View 1: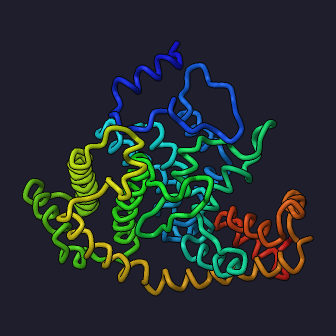
View 2: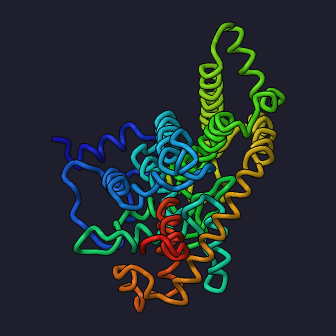
View 3: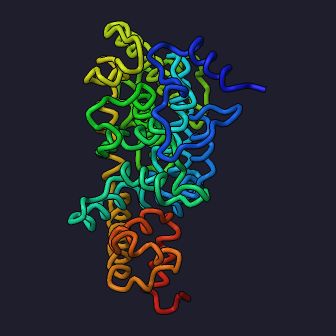
Length: 384
């Protein structure tokens, strides 16, 4: 059987010196016995996967609301894609794959129903109490709201995974600030990888979903050098390929090109900064994991196209406005009449403010559950 000493020896032998080793973790809030054959980060990964919040990601919106079709990505499928991309990058750079995977799997646990429109609504509603940030909410989920263990609240994850949840940042995500998790320090390389894997997954699966929905047109994408160069190479190799396989090959090649560039650029920066330990990463003052300038320039028009044609499409905008309305009305009812909350939720009032309890309850809802609650509260013919 694999022992903790063997895990430590493996990490010291095969991981890069600047990787975050599990035996060097800053530990857990509530001390626990060390597991006989799993590292601390493996345990964190498993705790996230078995959590209720992780399961609920299946019915939370990415871009398209869940009931619009089974094909479109949800928070859960997005999270799994992020984890796979992040694992590939971490392994190539000899970083801690278990830590990367745990952070990637946990990075969206604090997301509201209805995507970013849901977060915007809760941020406005909670403005007098510090607002709402889904990274900080994700930490609250794993520290407080998950109820699975008799000896402590939450999942009692390691310091490094909790830091990765709070400091997660991307083109869509703003890092939170939690004093106990050293906001002045740079995140680990493992956290930085999860951040950019999130961006890669976002861009490429939104292209896929956008084309499937008809909101994006291939003629728009052909104008982009990043898409067009790969498109030409695939048609040259497979002249008679059908539309669906062509789309899949292009998107797969886009991911591969970005991941390869990221690995090469990050390796170069690690050498340039002469990193010798994970502590060097924390005190450097700048992030290391990044694309080359060439890929950054090629990605910019793609992201601008997605913003214009997909995220601001009138159908998506209409649904976003409806989503904000649902959340605003639910919040108002629960605040004015907390007795409308389920009994197990009402029990938290006193330990936390009514506003915080209501915010937690709504943030944890799936799209489907939020819509059902809205019907029960406002449709006179719906059973409550």
